[in-house]
Image (cartoon, rainbow, N blue to C red; front, side):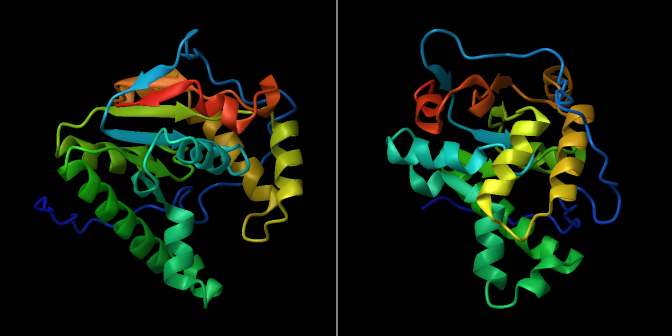
Length: 225
């Protein structure tokens, strides 16, 4: 069994930083994210290490990782979802799960599970929005403890498609205003150049609804060591 290192005691920032972001519409084609690094004609090989999903709510992250698991491209245990951890910890008391203290518990547990994977030389997929530099810095620091490469996969549909997808999900834990706010933050801070400057070893766009690509088709474009 791998020896696990404890996480540090620093407070974990919430994905947006509570109260720090105002929801502002980004426009129909408002997710202008700069230079793109797209998958080539064959499956893009993702090395063992940390895989960070970067995208607003309703951008297709969960559907993508479910397709990866369903088609045997990654192990189910490799996926570390902050939403699932929050449900595990606060499912019976959802209101208690929407506080700064709850965020600290959720993201601390996320880090612990990622560390468990990286300590054994495996792959961990961080399934949360990760649209802000502080949220990614936390993950990069964890990966740095193990000299694990960090691959960032971006999800960036046009805002219209994003809101349409959100409306179809019927989720009450995320509002339309919050979807817009996350999209706005990603438009500012989610470009490929910035992700590389933060320390990503590779950045790839995951095609989705806007490109007419299903989650299963998107998953087939990536392979994992």
